[in-house]
Length: 121
Image 1: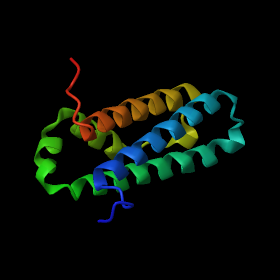
Image 2 (image 1 turned 60 degrees about the vertical axis):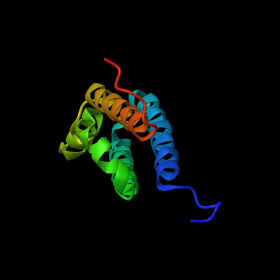
Image 3 (image 1 turned 90 degrees about the vertical axis):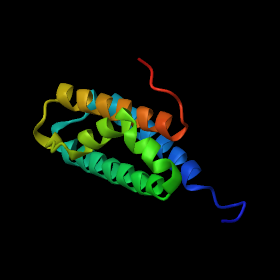
């Protein structure tokens, strides 16, 4: 890895920051979205979920830290959210906003895991 190539931890941190910004943007836009735009927003959520999976892949490359990260309850919560099957196209806007809020929270928690910040209780 050269000096110009960020470590998997830095790449994951950058990706999570980008995902978090996109989630905030989408959450702010949801109330004003006409019905015909729901599919576009659903596709964006699918894309963000894919980016989260890619980010998880970056983390998996950090073998020495994987045990610590996997043991963190925040990682399990993020995995559980990704495993849920949501049909955002047919969800009311308030439910989509709540889902986005959950994604935002889990993304922030994963960022804390990556940065090795402690769990806040």
